[in-house]
Image (tube, rainbow, N blue to C red; front, side):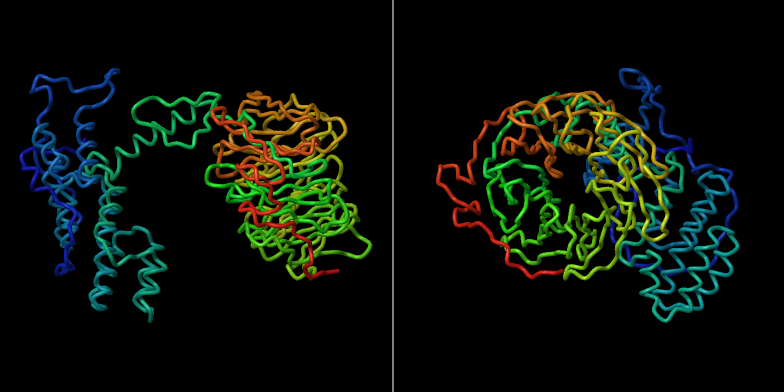
Length: 592
């Protein structure tokens, strides 16, 4: 096991404290030790009439359990408590040899630290790896002290003969000839402050845990246990941290299933809606030729911020800029308008002669926008309207959806009725998601690895697109016969799937199992689109042909009916939530 001694008073443990660099020598040895850890083992618990194993299942070793707790106490700064535990239990955290080794490291006594390392009963490879870390630290401290010759000598006579990490040795050599060592140190990840404490942490990764208890081991064990409980929680959607006092379990009451607000500012069918990336706003698009920006206040209530007018045809969709400061609105085969979210003013109008836009979106850098056009092409424009790229011809379907991965390299678009194209802009590599029937819409997961595809056959398919596309799950139960119905990922770590439906309901599935876990009723017309708040797993929005938007939350809150942004005291306003807003007319610059 490596051995731990109990002869040494706990007060002599090496403690984390500032130590000035000590004088450095260049002599070292790597001989094997015949005396592992150099002393006797800690007193066995059997000698005290107690069992070695503890816990209800008898699978926890008592000495390891005590040492892990002791380590946690010292890490948390409870040094007196840690020392008392060592003394009372008779189980020391480290042996005398290990404590000496730790002290030599913090004192910068490198040569003696290497000697002590060889007394710990370790295998040859572990000794070499740990010695390399020690001598590497010595090397960089020599350079920091401008002892160039000493650094060169030890690199040749001590570090290179180890035959360990040749690449790192070459990087160390480059430090010697570099004119700016500070810059090279930074590139190599070498820190000047607390470097010896960081060295101890690195040594703990190399040395067996029976020799040096790993840092934060108790925290790691607790986090692993909580993670297992969370992953085993079928309906996990909690925004609160998991408690250590009880086993974790989420019930259905953590799924948004009650209509907390009904937003009625649109005068016609609501076709599209989307929460902003930061979850602080919701934008909606309607057949009434307008788009609306709603603000989510601190209490979770949505307040009307701006009504955006100026489109001459129905607004098909909206798209938030990466920083949520701007919004695109797409008029059906008419124009795309770019709006300032804070003021509600139209900044720019994008048009192309004889061609109308069918979709819009932002490039991840926020400096370019994408536009699907009625001639089945997809164009990339600068913010001033200058065309940067274009994909033309029969490759693009009239169905308008497209998406761009966060790194900007992968463009995803429907290129035929039954096929989605995955195009890598850098390599020009093309991959295909092929369905057996017509695709009506799709959405990309937050991590960019999964695609949710809505089909004309009342099915929703989940595809893994990390490499070659693989169909991994199917969701059914919703209704679709005539309209474009949109679905979305949502909830904690996007563990759920939500979709609109032509039977006036919202459907929620468990992503992994495919089971329907909630069916939300209340709308009086087809539900065209849903959006799950990306920062609040308890908030879901749905848009319907009944001219309303419903905000769904947990069942414990009360329903609020909001007409045209009316405040809670019934005062009517026609724009921003503070009562002094106004309907915004588009008067921005134009590109053709």
